[in-house]
Image (cartoon, rainbow, N blue to C red):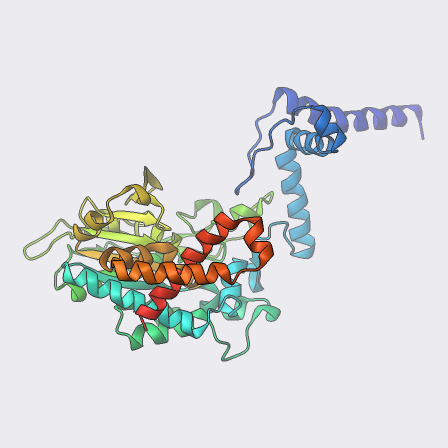
Amino acid sequence: MTLFAKRFLLVFFLAMVLVPVLQGRFHFSKEAGLHGAFAEVARPTLTWDSLRANTYQPALEQYMEEQLGFRAYLVRLRNQLKFSLFRTLESREILVGQHNMLFQPSAVASYAGHDCLPAAEVRFRVRRLRAVQRALRQHGVQFLFVLAPGKARLYPENLPPAQRPAPGTPTNYTRFTAALQADSVALLNFVPVFAHWKSTRPYPLFPSAGAHWSGYGATLAADTLLRCLEQLGQLRFPLVRTVGPPRIVHTADSLRGTDNDLSWLMNLMWLPAATPLAYRQLAFAPPGPGQMRPSALFVGDSFTWGLMLFSPYMQREFAEDTRFWYYNNAVHLPDSVYHDTGQKVADLNLRQQLESRRFVVLVLTEHNLAENEFGFTEQVYHLYHPLTAADQTAIDKLAEKLTSQATWEEQTKDLEGLIQRSRQQAHALFDRQHLQ
């Protein structure tokens, strides 16, 4: 090796070491950040206790790694090599299926029945929903349970073979739909609807790179939802009409709304090729004779965004005081962006919020059926079925019994927490007995 070659290699390796350090210190080159949820690592404080416990050194190492220049680029390069060569990902939030179709592992697990609730729990939950529906109807409010389609259930042929459940596997979907229909809870089940549209509609109902219904599928669902609410509430919404052919998008960086919400999380050098998607062009007319924009409260998961991000169904078809309670926590205005009002559901007057609406619409997809409707139906049920003094006495006695049955270790370790948990469990058991 010549002297020139040796010097060149020395300079090259020094640059490989020093340039990232200088970039991390001076940021002379603008870097694109990584997508996803990341906890910012704070610089650790050097103390004698942290040195003795050997916590300072690992914390400092993690902090310095986060501050390394061009880190985002290097992470994307690593991810790209793994995906291109082995079709594997660093993210545990994404499952790569056949034809590079992306899935959420939690949604696939629900489709396979891994989170299936006991039949008795499902019956209780549905009976509580029926009680909520009756209570709201007595105050002139129509309740509708909307079951959004799951991507894994709609496209099982694109799942990895090992992730496909055996036929007849019990799931929350099968148990809830049977119980909801048996107890006459107002239900709009989009699963069979989308299964029919899958073979009859010309455009994809789910994007290959996203977890939610596509912009095209979401607008079809919104049309169907309006027709269902018209029948339920005996009213007519303002007219929505299609204007010309859909706009077809072929490139990943032109996708809208949630249509690429999984591919961005892959943090690759370049996005996988996108399946061409269609976006309907719609015109929304003002209310005509005999038509109205009713007030509605939407409570649900992220599938609800599709009713407003792609086309302004919630903005133009419902009254201005319509709100979306995201996971029954954050209060959002219907908008083409994620418009958080800053309010929390817990700070609102629940009775006033419910009884000022024409409709209450609960929107869930399959993998959220196990989540107790995010506490919403429980809160509404207790609002309209308050405990009597006798009820409270029965709950107190049951809580005392549960506390006394705890082990000695549980009683001595955290007695106050044990009493609180026993009261919560006793309250839940009382509700189940009351709704038998």
